[in-house]
Length: 68
Image (cartoon, rainbow, N blue to C red):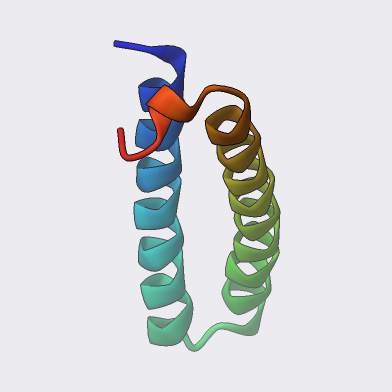
């Protein structure tokens, strides 16, 4: 497995975790829990953006990684 495919797999896992956190945030009624989920979502969203930028850079530098 190439580094590019591992990074893309990590990105997919993070997006899954993000969706789960969003679901939990919508289901909770306790304000402290909502804030905790919101903070976690903010952090994971930032990581996702960074990984997407890194994947774009990898695909630009190594075109054979596109579509993996």
